[in-house]
Image (tube, rainbow, N blue to C red; front, side):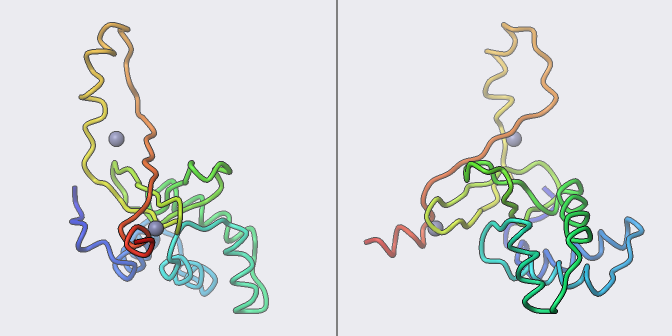
Length: 153
Ligand SMILES: [Zn+2]
Ligand SMILES: [Zn+2]
């Protein structure tokens, strides 16, 4: 993986996502910077509507279309991932481009990135029997993070 987990801080995410945005030919306008700032500061998964409401509270207005377009771009470029285990499939979490999975805490909503993946190798014998060609997979792990377990003790 290109990124060691120790480099995956919110500040590095904020910087790298802006660099990628510029590299894709998108201008880093004030609304886009405000969106990146807010996502970088988020402590767990969030929905697009939470982002819309927060930016409206901060700046008095926000363009819903700008927010949704940027979220779509960030997700397609790998800087955000959809969280499935909340049942709505509308929550996003910060992510890093490349093949990763997330371990989502069901208590606080934090999403840890897992960069190791051997899923397809581990089920290859079963797939061989089906003669099925895999194009990708979705895997999300959910449970309780260290912080939440420590607090409960
Ligand atoms: Zn937690
Ligand atoms: Zn995988």
